Amino acid sequence: MMKVEQISIFLENRAGRLTDVTRVLSESKVNIRALSLADTSDFGILRLILTDHERAKQILKDNGFTVGRTSVVAVEVDDRPGGLHSILELLSNSQINVEYMYAFVQQSGKNAVLIFRFDRTDQAIDILQKNNIRIIPGDELYNL
Image (cartoon, rainbow, N blue to C red; front, side, top):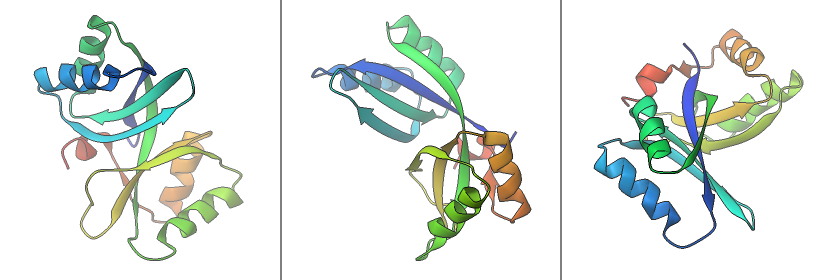
């Protein structure tokens, strides 16, 4: 499976709400592997890659959080000037839109790892693979 499971949590914009999420995950011994926090004036969206997303999703729901699940793609990017640009150019040339992206906590060897959400995920995976760009499967990513 080339896709990675990401959990999205909708948070009210108020002090302590993010701490509530990290407390629940900490007490449940679920490790955060990557995260992104985006906000609007009314609420925030916390996107997480976790070591045990199934368990985390249930525990967070049990604690009153609104939780969604999305498939994203982890891509190994050459850690050099232009490394990201070359990947984005391939995707753009195929009319694939990057809805959002964020960095993974750890490198894979000498390369950076970026998490992507595409408008056409299967086509993006196909293009990346045809161009010998390494996609890191979920099982491997959760254990990096």
